[in-house]
Length: 228
Ligand code: C5P
Image (tube, rainbow, N blue to C red; front, side, top):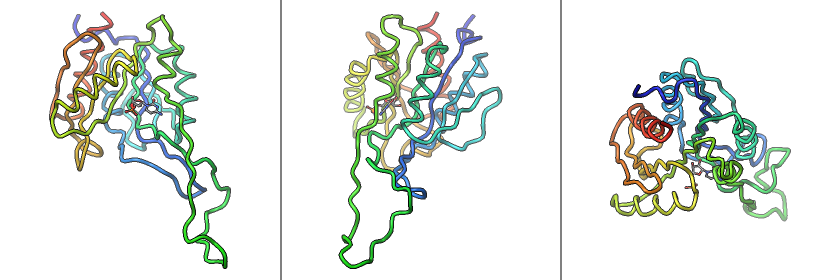
């Protein structure tokens, strides 16, 4: 019947923003709260899925959901790759840092008030792997697992957001791209958001502004349609 396509399936969801350490006490981070990923996990569990949440966030764990705690993009990549083989559906809801500090200082970085110290340190960055692209590539032609990507898009009009999201869907080659409208005080850390669900060869489905729990159910409806 309707809504039972996830029953018994193994769903792996990444959530939250990665933290890329500079030294033992500092990191480069982002404003992702993890709320949408947790809402997706809760909704999938309600639909009977076995859910593994790979998360940087410290939110209350929804009932029946397994947690794998991570901090950095590299840790997240390792855990997602390890889980991908046994997954029916993967959702990359995490906000993965595109770059990380090239060096992690073993000791707390000093203010450097000694004679000859530079006024301020320079942080060199290196690129993080694109985890979503790697998962899509690794599954090859098998089409399993079904892979969902997220895209945080800014834009003054829906047109901008949709154009960027369509291009990103084609570039990322995932099965569903959830395009989030982000901006000043929009989406990140909020309980509501507006999203466009983009699938290859299909018209976008727009939901919101709506509660992240409702958005989660709409995402699973779309995934369920594609799996049935
Ligand atoms: O290209 P962009 O960062 O907007 O793509 C967002 C999507 O890609 C999200 O699903 C995010 O989890 C994923 N991503 C990733 N690895 C990165 C950057 C983004 O998996 N290094």
